[in-house]
Image 1 (tube, helix red, strand yellow):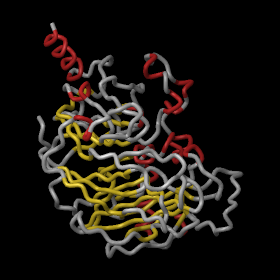
Image 2 (spheres, helix red, strand yellow; image 1 turned 45 degrees about the vertical axis):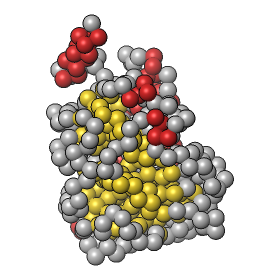
Image 3 (cartoon, helix red, strand yellow; image 1 turned 90 degrees about the vertical axis):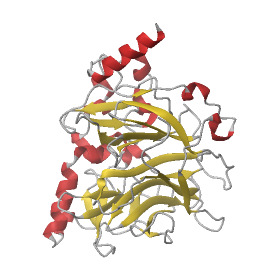
Amino acid sequence: MRCLAITTVLLLVTTTDATADPILIEGSEQARLDVSKINGGLDPLPGVKNVEVFRTSPDDYTYNHHVDLAAWKGRLYLAWNQCQKDEDVWPSREVYSTSGDGEKWNAPNELFPQGLSTPIRMFFFRAPNGRMLAIAGLRWSFEPLVERNKGPVIVREIRADHSLGEVFVLVPPKEGTKVTTGVATPPPYRTCSDPGFVEGCDQLLANRPFLEQQDYGTALGERRMKWHDVANWANVDEYTRGRADFFGKGFSFFHRKDGALVGIAKLGFVVTSTDDGETWSTPARPKSLVTGGAKVWGQRTSDGRYALVYNPHPSERFPLVVVHGDDGVTFSGMRVLFGDKPPLRHPGLNKVPGPQYVRGVSEWSSDGSWKDDGMWVAYSVNKEDVWVSRIPLPIAGR
């Protein structure tokens, strides 16, 4: 009877029955997880390489978080947010580092002039016209900011020679918003004299799934996913509805084997779209995808398969694991990428121990010039230090 039950679930998934979970994690590893042990008591992934890009020192900004990765002109780009001590408070800045091999990284430089920017969930967009754009939130106040009021966006180009272009406003503040920083607001992007840059910005704004990666779809305004309004939730099971207020935080997106676009957010919320983000399925929280308030990263890997990277615990951000599969629906073979849980070295607001908030190179942040055949992901450890991992392909543990 046990084998028959598993076969039935797989049949429901592959026939895309509306009642089937859009993500299914198979295997005994979840039941064996013990966060009191090194690696959570699970097996490490053979061949994975972890590299510490930036280590916090007590005389520098001790909060480092909100990472994002891109590939551009043969280099990996890694951007993140730095705060002096506490999360999302002033003083704060967005920085980036690059690498030609994933192991040696240059010292971080400002991605935007300090005082202009605030972190959002993604920093890089490679436009269909070939331009690479860097974005961040427009800082309109030095008061502590929350994700729901990070709607304005600024943009600049990363040129082919790796230099940075001028800064412009991509998404302006809502009418009536008072900018109190005393820093001059950049001009609208349409005032730029470079038509290719303007076209790239137009293409970014037209990409609704990319902008949905910002919490609650705030960068999209009225164009955001209708599920951000809980009044639209109907026929949703109680397990999913129980955290409806949390829906839409930290999305990552990938196209699965059947062409559907899959979005995975914090707490394991999953939505799918068959029209590239014009409409979305009802939110679901697959019970086999056990995770909490840190992000889940999903992507199609270069060998044509799929992987999810996340913390497999409802509250602990430890360990960081990867599961993989052939179709973007069913995943298995859970293995540990980062299994250490070092103690916090520096006090700070909202700091949580462990490797967390993982992101990789999305389909919208690469020009195809990075020739390494591994899967690369970035994350912060304790919201203090910034790391990357190279995952060898094919992923072991099938």
